[in-house]
Image (cartoon, rainbow, N blue to C red; front, side):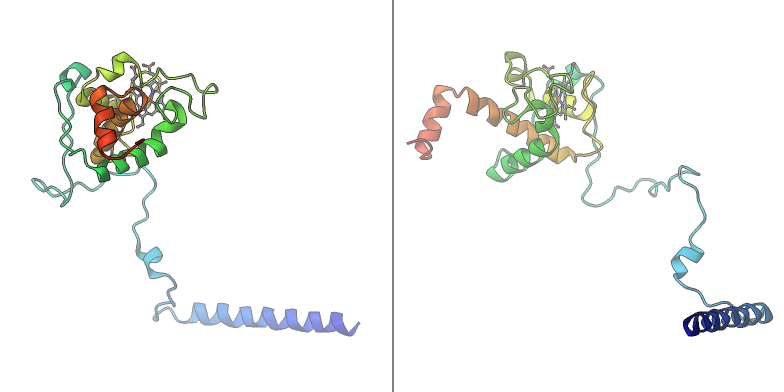
Length: 193
Ligand code: HEC
């Protein structure tokens, strides 16, 4: 009994507290209200996809950004050489991004045996003679533009990361079917004795 009186009293207290707030709020139009989280109060009320995105000032290029000029067809891309040097660091970068973006479908060595296969249709092998014969530009072109079932990876990756993946695909070729020169070079470096 006493506890329900207590509950009644405390709810009465809250009601009167609310009234005081409401009255004081209405009475003082000349004073601005207290503002919590001002950013949200003053931010422009735009709906998603509404209006134009802000364009950069004409003739300017953000620092540290390279404009990506892409050939219109894979044949046009054919003659492009990889401008990224084939260093250990760049090969590591290539492996990192191959393992993030490509391995799920193409598999660890490019055989088309990634984890999503066969739920996703099996991609052709990246160890094929066709792909071994692909120039840097063509490999880059497929990643950038996609090809039939394969989506473009341009939205997720920077050009530099795709160029590094090109180096890594070449390294996968060498690892799977090394030439005599590759074996010699590897032996010299101490790999495999
Ligand atoms: C969602 C699965 C999927 C992912 C992820 C994916 N690919 Fe593909 N890839 C495919 C499929 C499927 C094809 C075959 C497309 C076709 O039918 O022409 C393909 C084709 C290719 C080809 C051309 C092969 C040929 O013989 O014509 C290359 C090169 C390639 N992918 C590289 C990559 C690289 C590099 C990545 C990572 C940046 C990547 N792919 C990510 C599914 C994928």
